[in-house]
Image (cartoon, rainbow, N blue to C red):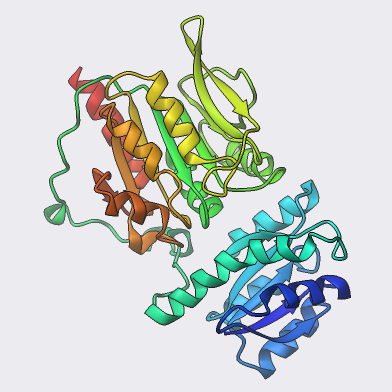
Length: 362
């Protein structure tokens, strides 16, 4: 797997090259200090992956990669600052596969292990994809003209499992790699009269979740915000766990509110989906939670889902075909915890349908 490292700083180009050294099947075959030089190198050699510094990226670079080098995966590498978060989220919207956080300084003693830790799981994923010949680019529904969106055949619709008894009170979503784009399809598609609160844990660092919450809020009919300590969990509001902090729920004076926790990482993540799901199982009654596991690496959310199942939650997992990374949903599917596997483009509609079916039955 030939990699092109693009960063305007010599020290970081060397750092990323060193971080990839020793990963089986991965070769840094070129470096570039600018997007324009990177494009020239892409035309000269058959690279498969571009590591792109968020500040080195320019407005047209990713568009040109998508147009001329569709087989090339792009991983954005940047610092967790407000400026970088905007640039990174725009890059992910344009088709970058994932984000890897880089150290503040390339010469720091811990810079190399930090960089390697951020990149290793992504390249393991890419290696697995290449060995199993899985498609590396998911065609997102918004790329199709509105009039040409595929319509489901009513005769092919399968009978959904019976919904468990109980009054649904909250929707909880766990998501990771590929998450920003998937949430941009899911949350704006929920109607303005959606009658439940929505809680989301996304594996993203500090600053990024605040930026994403603002973007989602602008595009959605529901109110979307980054969660804060003591926020009420109320219908019509979407609360996104802040980067770097676990999110939980607790009851105060008869009301459910948000709590934030700076405890150890779980599943190498903070925030962790398992952390939220455990608290939901302890806070809500039978059949009160609709839990959704979406695209992402690893198995975060599976153990928490198992606990929610003891409280008769209803579980949806994103389908393998519509995931950027079928890791977290696969863990839930393989454990037999998912009630339905749903394509991304149908997920908002199915959530809304389940919520209204349950309410009409009561």
